[in-house]
Length: 131
Image (cartoon, rainbow, N blue to C red; front, side, top):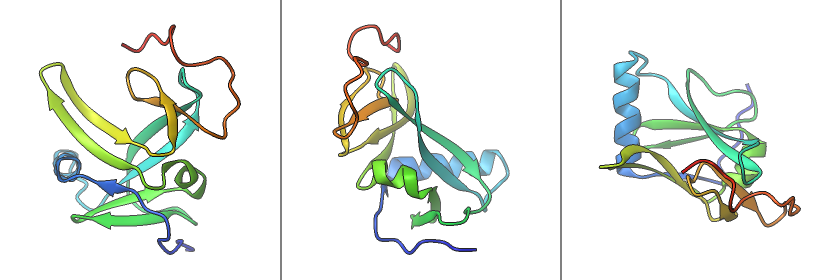
């Protein structure tokens, strides 16, 4: 299998790594990793996605931090390079958040974003419905 050498990266905070480790234990899949991806959609044009996965796919970037494997496909890495994944637990609820330096605007909920290279399609801002 071809796995790309790590030239671009994303980071996990200790809180995110601990939460992923807990999820892997709860699901009884300790050898799995976290797939992070970007897809079209969301109210700002692009949206983040995450899933637990057993192994890397061909050409994936594989990043290992604090014993957690993170799989990112090459297209998603173009949008996520330099991003930090965190887990935030607050009175309003908990969840993963992505601090993405490539996003020039994002939805109020933080699950969708727009990059500088995207044409302004009039999305984002008002009418999101996420928060």
